[in-house]
Image (cartoon, rainbow, N blue to C red; front, side):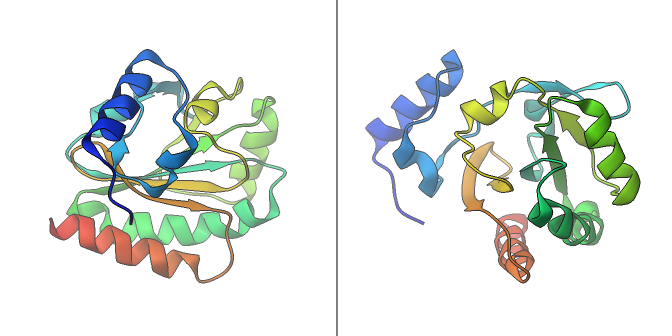
Length: 168
């Protein structure tokens, strides 16, 4: 992970606070995770800031994305394995059509919470350019790791990052 200057971190924090998009250089991590509130699959609103104090893996996915479908069981296993230690996976679905997302969740059941971003406002804030995209946020609300795409075995990288952050 690359170190960011204090000025870059401050600028990123100000941009996130105003809802502006993060600069492209922010992909290394080390910047405050932009807060968001989205409706969950069970109808409740879920706010990222309410998870402060936990390590959170935020995964942006879509129903039409084959790698997303492949990745979800691995993310669910990671969620179940480390949940008791203060870790959570949060799925952010970007489909405009909620029914398509719900159909995927019927096929691939997960125990972690899923929220809906049908206008892609949150995914634009995080500068998500492809599916899936994963952001690991530490207990202090700082993005510590960013991963774009998925191939089998990537979950081992996530596990290593999560273990390090849980130990902090």
